[in-house]
Picture 1: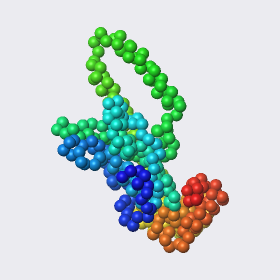
Picture 2 (picture 1 turned 30 degrees about the vertical axis):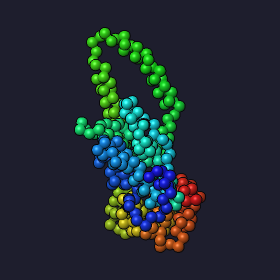
Picture 3 (picture 1 turned 135 degrees about the vertical axis):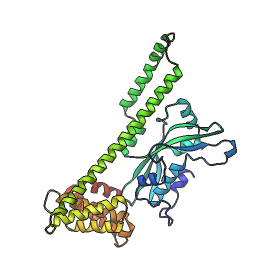
Picture 4 (picture 1 turned 30 degrees about the horizontal axis):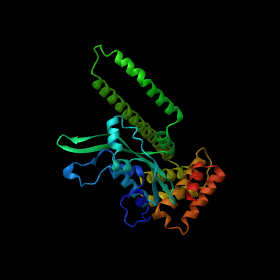
Length: 342
């Protein structure tokens, strides 16, 4: 199915094929990558005995397109892939000449009209290979990941400094080649072996940086969750009756936890509403808990049908809450969400 045809699919399907609460959960549950998060093999060229089989290289894009449409969004190509992660020139040439591969890779944006957030997914090939000695079928390793707008821009549209650095490397190549030729009579390892080792080194460095990025994101998420749990635990230690501040904090923490995990959504939204109804209480955390509770309520009113269906004008109520947070507290998140709701 072409991209134009995909975008023609009507919104609001009755049959939900992908009941996931985030595109990241979709990528994990539908196993668009390997279970450890590394790039996954997809057959893009079948041998003569299987030439009627469809290419698998379009699978990640197809799944993301369906999910975006089911959420009420419009899925479109943001940046074309330049195959920058494919180091081998011959592999890059084979992939670039395959229409099925090129139509399935690049950066795609899901533009959300009525929901809270748009998102960007990158599908990039790392390498390609022959499946096995007994078959001429070939597979491509695709890595599917979410990116912010800045990450996508930096990856697909490198800065002038990065381009200049790359050009400097290319201009230095002839001098390096001349020096290599001059030392040709010396006893040195085989050139192909050196090139292979250099390629392996680059691949390992790329994978190491990706693992470091994921580990950093994981640690940040764990740190925030630990701080929240500590605050809730502190409020539960006292044997005396809980203060309004403690009650508001517990309701907000429970709502935030359940909404992030995508479970007990109706109960989570009710807890967020109760926390917000306390208003802005005194104390260092008073303003933050009040404004963040309001953000959760606004999200429930715009993206949780089981909750928003209880209100005749859920979208209007969400806007009133966000306008209050934006004007009275200069809340950046509320301003951003208001722009998306227009």
